[in-house]
Image 1: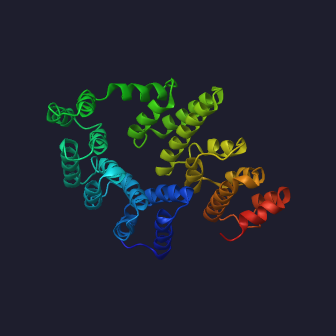
Image 2: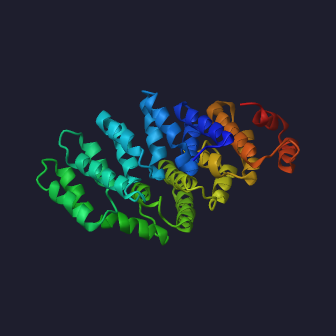
Image 3: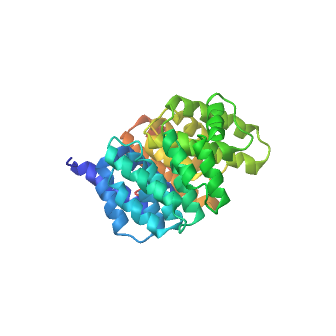
Length: 339
């Protein structure tokens, strides 16, 4: 499929952001490229091949995961050979192929994951990530893995494989309870469940979960625990952004309006992709209320503002821009300056 010049230019900008050190722009680029889909795969493969930076390569693999494109197989195999966190990202990317409409690609991805799970020469973390990637596979596949690992000397692999064979009912229960409004005591359990379920869950259920998590976040007295719930909320927003959904934009907007400190990167990354005109004034307000000590946060807010204004075609003559300029003239100049 030929790519229009405008789309090609956007893809070049987004893949360049994957190579940068701005975490918000990188996360936003991952989400936006995932929405663009297969048209971006060639550029992503070139980016992977022409860099040795592990963070960039991990970002490429994360972007490829929801696309389910068979061309992911080659880079995933390479990444598994490299080991470490790159190999773990590769197993997640292969998980995206398991339900591909290309049956051959799905079968090859399954074979690679199974081989990775049973390969005793690989590190425990890589093997465990391969086992986890096989969640949701038919019973026969999960039982096959459990049997293959039954005699493995690593007890953690055997335990995880047994959970896999049983369908990981604990994770299923945590997710279903959260969908119904019953959150676990600790956010880590739900975050693990979300990683496995959010990509295919009903958008409305994720929206309701965001609301429930926000309520829990506000009810917790311990600042560290509250931050954990906030990070989970941001991860759920990113899951929606990866699917191009705006069903929870209101929460992103309200999070900015109530922010007394920088929000997790995931919030601005989601705004980059799905934020609309209604988010511009809250961004300006957050920028105005930010002190000099949070210079990086201000840079990230400004980049997010420009990305939304450009996408929504908001110029200086727009009513929103005029209101911002009236309330915060200095802020308006900063936010509309060239990046």
